[in-house]
Image (tube, rainbow, N blue to C red):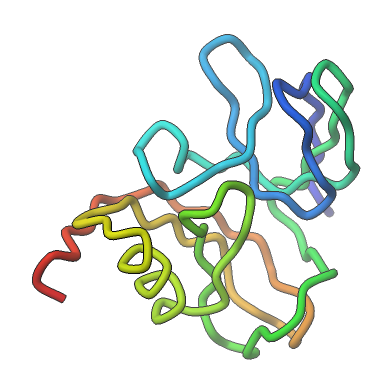
Length: 131
């Protein structure tokens, strides 16, 4: 059974966005660029504008994506709100932005080509300068 929670949006949020909650209690799109923004609480179930109530799926199956490989881990992207379907695409995104480091957040495992089981881990620092 899914754990659902709701938060007020601090910005426009789309259904399927990976999201984080700030110290002010507002929901924002998550990104692996910094540790605070890489603390994912779940994926938005509905879309909304700033100040709208957004429901978040914290730990259940979530569909609506494409290009996933069943069994592969899914990661938070450096692009706000998006996911990466593999470590390689996460690393490519970090390098394309010219970053020497980022915070990797494992969001879960792909179950089908369009959905994954949400199993969020704490973000961890990755120095990508030598990779």
